Amino acid sequence: MDLLLRADSQHLKAKLSIGGSKSESNRLLISQALENGIKIENLSNSDDTLVLQKALQSQEKIIDIHHAGTAMRFLTAYFAGQPGREVILTGSNRMKERPIHPLVEALKTLGANIEYLEKEGFPPLKIKGRKIDRNEVKILADISSQYISALMLLGSSLVNGLKIHLEGKTTSAPYLQMTLQLLEKVGVKTEFKDQSIHIFPSKIQPKTIAVESDWSSASYFYSLVALSASAEVELTVYHEKSLQGDAALVEIYQQLGVETCFKENFVVLSKNNQDLSSLELDLNATPDLAQTIAVTCFGLGIACKLRGLHTLKIKETDRLLALQKELQKLGAAVRVTQDSLSLEASTTIREGVRISTYQDHRMAMAFAPLALKAPIIIEDAEVVSKSFPNFWECLKKLQIISVTNP
Ligand SMILES: O=C(O)C1=C[C@@H](OP(=O)(O)O)[C@@H](O)[C@H](O)C1
Ligand SMILES: C=C(OP(=O)(O)O)C(=O)O
Image (cartoon, rainbow, N blue to C red; front, side, top):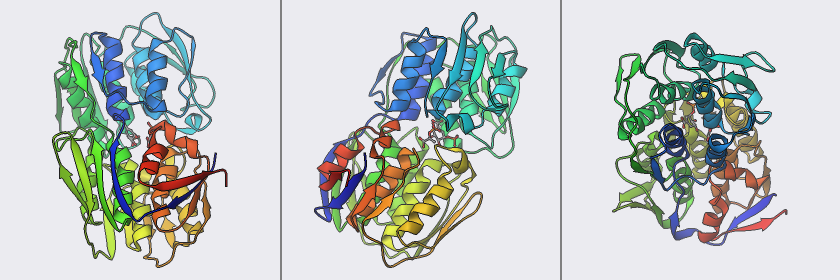
């Protein structure tokens, strides 16, 4: 389904309830599978969470996690440590191109039995679960933090705990902190010192945990507010103290003219004047914000230089190339390298351009706010369900009107 989007008003006013964080939800689902007394409130309704939940309940031999990176990585470690269980873990065509060898090799050194069924180093995998009693492992930390979170979650179930030594420059570091803090919340003792993470032998506690709403999903409303004439947009449930690294939005978008006011369990976003002519950021810690920020800068006519983006090439699509192609269609002058994107300030935005989304939810959601500047067509708009199934409903509440299959 393609959607033509146009804004009925440049003034945004709405109260929106955003779904639970998929990252927090997916970690807690693994902890819950290990200790079923754990209760989760405000669980994400994203496809990535539903697919993980279904996989954990399934007794089937073949488990297909589609596009969900965290599900693929967390389940690889989880099933490797389930004695007597044998599964084939597979995913979408794109998932079969997303590397998993650092995690598989680390698990094998711990004694796991895992085979690659197609291409060496990539899903699908055949996993024969075993009791894992070795307790020390090293892993490359610069490709995806999800491998390390997967090991930490497994470590919380091991009788001897687990010591994980990180090699190379850590990418997406706040996601490791999120895993550690959620493990602590369910009673697992952890320590992260220098380049080593220690998960101490612990008994997971049957706690009730409330998931905060998803800050990556909030980014699209920050972009909308930045591109509006004026705004008063309430988003629930958010707190000033977050486990999610993408809460860094608050500071980043302050530079782009968005003010955040924290209330009891929600935030109010409003529009301030900004006179920035260019923005330079290292997004190594917050890769999921890159597309939103690049598009906001384009819409505001601000130049930007975004660095620390090497992981974008192995996400749902090659996000650097996808951004470059689609921004160019709109008239942008943009260059990309293996790990950066530079955008020149532009004064015009072409109208009625069809934006391809490359089966990437964030391509659809990052470009949608440009409807405030010019009518825009988003192709395969249903892709948003990977992380944010209610996204288009929220846009409707902000009077961004959509026409189906233009
Ligand atoms: O652990 C997580 O929940 C995630 C970690 C990040 O991936 P990488 O560590 O692969 O960058 C992020 O991009 C992804 O959306 C969610
Ligand atoms: C990269 C993402 O997800 P994953 O790696 O879990 O598929 C994302 O949600 O932007």
